[in-house]
Length: 426
Ligand SMILES: [Zn+2]
Image (cartoon, rainbow, N blue to C red):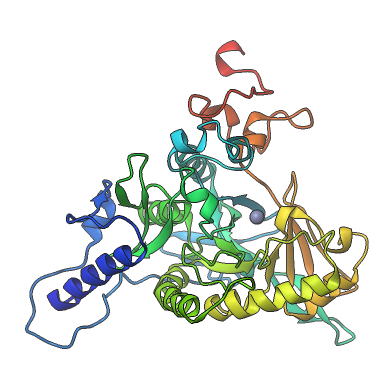
């Protein structure tokens, strides 16, 4: 039950936070795109006798572990899964293709490494239709001890609804970098008066838009609300964060070049502002991993640089999102240049800092439990322009998840060709 007082307070805070972000304040409430699902879920807002303002009462959200054999529940039988646990990752998705693909210096990079909102929507629907269900990367492996008492990672048995297949989602660079803001991406995640996560941003005409249909996080939240069987354990995705321009659209970072009391005061304000977003994301199945503070290349960085970067990530990001055992390599670059055949000093250092799952990028959901150190290395697949267009190496990338010809939106992307044969011509 949400009191009218707390509703008003939430709306006021939202309005204040939007103004505080330096955006053009408007006398009218920001435009909302259609979101019938959330409106029907709005809790009872009947007036109540005056009382202490309370936090907005959220819809209950249940997170459970797939490592528990629960047998049959509500007609669903959970069975052990011994196959590959597939892992897809996304960069921020393009909300406004006309801004992203406007021919500026970023356009080809965005085309290479990102998908549009429409493409992302179609990918979610396709993996759902093909029987994938979400699991959290943190549930796939655990730390245990071997027969000699040495710590070792083990692959957990996952109990999945019969006929379904487990799938991990991760999201890189969920930071809302400055360069992206004018290039067709959302600006930040915010908490709506309904207690749900929304995105904030500007449309190509400069109007403020608060939506759940333009950002990878809110779109998945909404998809799971509409298809709860896509997430039988409540898992969503793992958000891979750098720190150099803050996190989730909040500028929580320091800067070693210029720093003063005013900048620090603003930083602390941003830290306070992002805390309820983090709390709500965690409550609704999202988890966090490190993408290093500075998006540094771990194959070519010195150990000293990695140490300084890791400390800064822990200070500025880990202090907000909490501890994590997951490290997502920037550029997919492996520490010391190789983590498959050998374990170098940078890998050892990162493992000592608590990381256990080290994720690169590849063409299959490869994973390997290392035997000389307590750690797992794994690869993730990347639905994006490069793979949707196909390549000389692989024509029909990721055909277990979708038919790229059904996904790619060639009408909005730059004209850079495809390797596959169009359906109409096949
Ligand atoms: Zn990255």
